[in-house]
Image 1 (cartoon, rainbow, N blue to C red):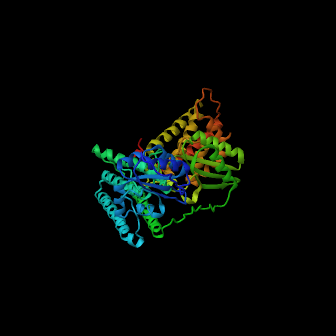
Image 2 (image 1 turned 60 degrees about the vertical axis):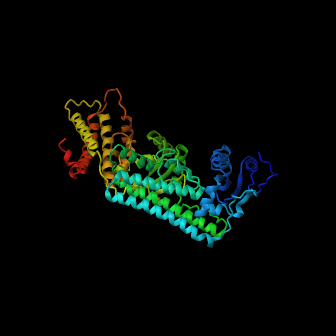
Image 3 (image 1 turned 90 degrees about the horizontal axis):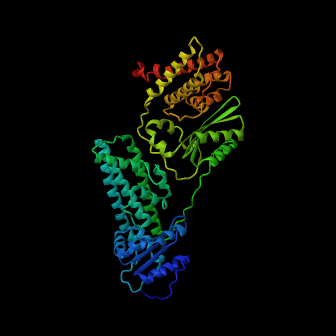
Length: 538
């Protein structure tokens, strides 16, 4: 064990870390230590130059390294001598800046392997340009390979090649921000690790779960399909993947430019976080809405995508991007809002998780692209929520429309059969009427917007019909003239009850008119407009 004089590290301003470093110097062949305090919110850097690679790897795994990182935002990086000098010879900008003489806090005077950075920017510029050009050259090779595969229509190979290109970008970012790349980690782990250095990276990848991402899952499926000699046809995702990759490329350019400026000036530039003020006019009703929603469910974003006033009542249409906000939760939020605000306002609440929207874009993208826009955003829990990987080109189509339209038509015919029964036996007609109304609304919304809503309340479904096409409001008078409160009546019959029907002829006639007119609308929309010609014979 070595002995040395009492070492002091006043620049660290951290007694816990100072004690650890004194132990390191006594127990290992530490050559140099460089510490750069970052004046912004990102990590400060402690780079420890050690003789052997084996020691560097072992010390990097110590628990205190993670503790210092989490508690004090100091990133500790052990680098062995051969690698440090090699990176320096290549003109690596991370080494060039963070190993400046001004950052030196410990020097083993007996060692002959010390790194001494004496060159100024003029002397370093040529090496920096070579280093930068090497990245651009290799990146362009990867990119041209992807473009060639796209032109050849090799779907699987496009995604696996994109995976290699994105991995190349991520490893380059790792080196530029931490000085080291984690070759054995998955793409998901690389992204998660880089978030700590580059919060903006969250904007480019939609999460499937807490630590997994939609695009990396797509790459994995393409790799599995290739191994099984299957084909994966997701050509419409090429542009989305390209946008994500281009965003990483831009982050690399920005980091290279940042390091270039820092090396030239020899000091940090202070980056202030600019908070964009929401210049939208304040609305007390909206403020109550947002507060009520946030108190009820954990929401990433809220979009106010439509607002209408009819008579004395105003209706707000809100999309929540959240997890765990099911139909029952939305119903409770709606009740809470009405109790706070009163009867002059209605609220149409939709909620989906970000991963659900991403996964179902092939069917519903037309609906969501019209809503998820900056001008409609009224709340965001973070500045780093990812943008969706939109399918481009996207050709909207009514997948499985037949399976929604035909049951609605069959329910209507079954309803008519009971109504026209001469014995006036209306047993179960109320439940059948409710089933028809719900089925009509979901099918109508799907035809008009390419969005198939969940089994929401009947009032919410009708309000979505009005959003889909305001002309359907012409049937509001039938709802208003119904012999009892229309939507509570429907809600009561969403579940079956074992009891005698108390419907009379006049009440049934009102229901019959509603079914006839709405079925007429749907028939014209689906059959007369030619959406289901091939199924009309069913």
